[in-house]
Image (cartoon, rainbow, N blue to C red):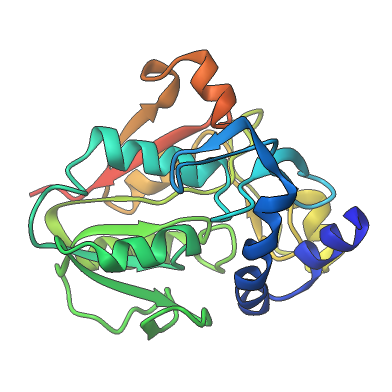
Length: 258
């Protein structure tokens, strides 16, 4: 069963996985009923979370069986809930690129948000476009989310610059990517093209680069101001473990100068 689960995660295209997940979420919480781990997004507890990731970057006990949050989703949620005005400020115009299922319906329902989603192929996106050339006017959005996208695109700087262009002056955003904290520089090699080699070198079959600790410098090159948020400074070690967060993951919050 575990082999089938891993094969589905690493083989099926994302739009199909999104559709299948709606069925999976109904029975998985019953199997994992318990109180050892907790998802702060859905506020449910479980015996354990599911495993997730490719053969190269597989992690145990990380995927919430109800709302399908991973460590990065729970980190972002805690930041938005406890360290931002995202849930309280009125009339926030938001663009959410590659909208995560665990956030999508909740953000849609928030009365303080003017919420739009965009993606190249996602079945839950409002708009479909190529991130290299966003067909929208400048300076539109106060908040932009674009998570785990830049490792897939041909020209990440171009995509960052496009997001910078449509962000309002004074706006802010979160643009998470997988980062190998053992690397100082981002690793790219255009000659690596097969799914097998990309998984080996970049952690997943459809990634085209593996970011290093210079990721915030790349964001700054696109024009953004970058502030580092370290969750370890704000919650206890017990909460880190209960929420199953990555202890060394940093959240880079970008903003556009006024």
